[in-house]
Structure formats: structure tokens, C-alpha cells
Length: 325
Ligand code: NDP
Image (cartoon, rainbow, N blue to C red; front, side):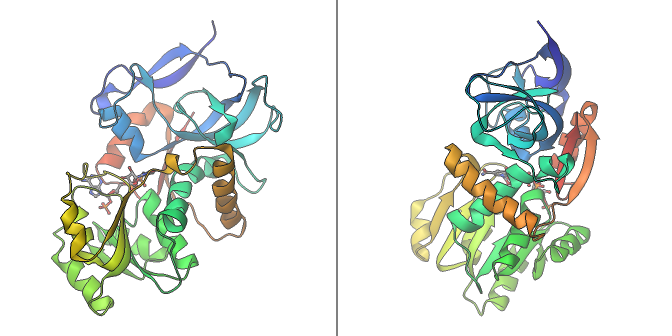
């Protein structure tokens, strides 16, 4: 049996459980393609799957997205070919090879290199689904983006500007605030010392009304503040747990302002090939029109995966982290 190198976890835990090991090389099923992975994208979900917040069947190969070249086709695959350069959402991209359903593979335009390709899909589709489907951002809306200098955050800021909205971002350092501004945030509040100044600033900017929507990927730490700064009839979209899961919510709190509360995941917006193709075509169109900049924080050699997870979890990063296979 042929083998390959991959990052696998034998048990859930902190970054010390990450192991670069030899495992069987996968074969594509009829509706899959085998991809020689060039770069794997690092996402917060990888840390949840590693820690056990999102439990996995063990041992487990991490990685939900990547880029590379197709090296083998499943027997039913017609519209892709060996040699195609692709970006993909896959089950195990921290590996030399990944077998991926064609329902989550996008061919890369010539202008997009493999490094950028690996940075595009998971955070890009997440951000685009948030501004189009979770809450359909309108020109002139007031938007609050938490962790505005993060991977998803920077893209949300850019997309909300493209859509003509007013963007307020939160970050924990001056350098992150500067980056968020360069990516479209009109105002940035440092939330690292508490949330009173955030509530004050949102009230001041919106004439006491609050924002139309809060995009909250920080979770436990920011949830209360998100409910405070949203306006009457506004929307809070919770989509992540960077600071921990949001505790159970008393539904009556929503009645204070008739708040619409959502908890979304990208994967439930792209359950079919058609849904994936339609959302990714819109994203790639924005890329082709040079309307999005995917800021790459750092490309780590795959052997340095522990460092990448530590940097992400310790809030040391901005934008996208990649692993080079
Ligand atoms: P980021 O690059 O945004 O990193 C997380 C950021 O969250 C940090 O840089 C930090 O920014 C902020 N943060 C605030 N509190 C904490 C804390 N206690 N520990 C760590 N970070 C903290 O990551 P991603 O762009 O990969 O993901 C952002 C969020 O989006 C995550 O919660 C992720 O799970 C979620 N997500 C959800 C998806 C979905 O389908 N629902 C898909 C993709 C991502 P600062 O220092 O400025 O506070």
C-alpha cells in the first residue's frame, strides 16, 4: 500500500497532539478527485477539531481546505481533468494528498496562484454567505464586525464596503486596528479592556439606534455586547467560538428589541454542488474584479503546524495562515 505524510491527531488536546506521520494514501471514490495538495489553509475550525470542541473519530487528519493539482479522477468524474489547478474544501487537507468530492472543488482562474487559492474558499465563502445569506447587507447599513483583523474579519470588512455599508470593527491591538481600517473598517474599537467603550461608540455613531447587524465569530466573550449594540429589529449572527462557545441563551432577551438571532455554519449553505458552485462563482467574480485582497499572514512549512495553531489561538495573527506541503 502506498503511503503519504500527513498531520494527524491520535487524541484530542492542545497543539502538542499534532503529529506529522506516515499514513495510507487515499484513493478517489467514483465522485471524487485525488488532489496533490500544495497548500492547506489553517482555520479556527481546525483548532476546534483538534481540541475536541468539535469531536472527531480518531485518529483524525486535520485540514478543511487547500489548493493543488488533480492527479487522479474517480470513475464518474467528467467535468474535471488530471492537471487541473484547483481550490477545495476537503476533509483532510493537512496531507500530501486528499480525496475530495467534486461538489466542493473549484477550478482556479489562471490569475490565481496556488498560494492564494488555498486562502480563498473557507474564509471567503463564509464571509460572503454571511453578508448575502445570513443577513443581506444593504447600502447604508451599519455593521459591526468582531475580530475585524482576523481571516474572516478582514474579508467581512472588505465585502461590507463593496456593498456600501458603514463598518465598525473590533480588534485587540493598534496594529490590528490599522489593518482593519486599511481593509475597509470605517471605525475600529479596541475591545480588549471591556465592552463599555464599544457600546458608547456604536451609540454615538448610530445616533443611539445601534447597528443593523453584528457578525460575531468571537463567541462567549462578545455575545452580550453584541446583543447590546444591535438595533431594534436588528440581526445578530453568531458564527464562531474563538473565545469559547456562547452559553445557552434565554430567548426572552431577544424580545427586548425583537432581535433576530442566527447561528450559521458555511457548510449548511453549500450542501449541494449547485449551492457550492453558485456561492464560489460569486466569490471568484469578486476576486477577478480585484475587489478582494486575501492578506496572507504567513506560510508555515507543514512541519511547523504546531506553531501555526499556537499563533492562531494566541491571537498573534491577522488574515490567513497557510501550511506548505
Ligand atoms: P481569526 O483569524 O479571526 O482569529 C480569531 C480572532 O479572534 C483572533 O485573532 C482574535 O482577534 C479574536 N479573539 C477574540 N478573543 C479570542 C480568544 N479568547 N482567543 C482567540 N482569539 C480571540 O480566525 P478565523 O478567521 O479562522 O475565524 C474567525 C471565526 O470565524 C472563528 O470563530 C471561526 O470558528 C469562525 N468561522 C466560522 C465558520 C462557519 O462556518 N460558521 C467558518 C469559518 C470560520 P483580536 O486579537 O483582534 O481579538
